[in-house]
Length: 150
Image: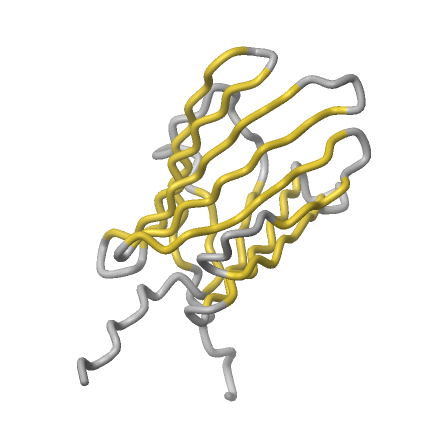
């Protein structure tokens, strides 16, 4: 019997590097992602805090990896149908959305790791009412540092 293939180490806390990311619309403030991935389930928690005085905005998504079915999430003005697939050492998120006004969107995000697993690349391609768009988010692994006396 073949040994199971090791999972890419996506789990962790990731902080967006504004300077290295290539975004259509720049993001101000601190954006973080927390990923918990065990090979069967992908949990992604996103937070963004524009300034120290603002409350962070957050959303999260938990998906069964390689599910043939799309998970449906109802937002305020859009319904998303999402699934995530493992492709070798990468993950591919597929999403389809429809607004309350019937506008349709399609979004894919390919997650890959570089720099010995310390850099997360999120290549996002969207097609919607604004036409095709592409963003590349570069996130670096956040390492907790022990506090004095610990």
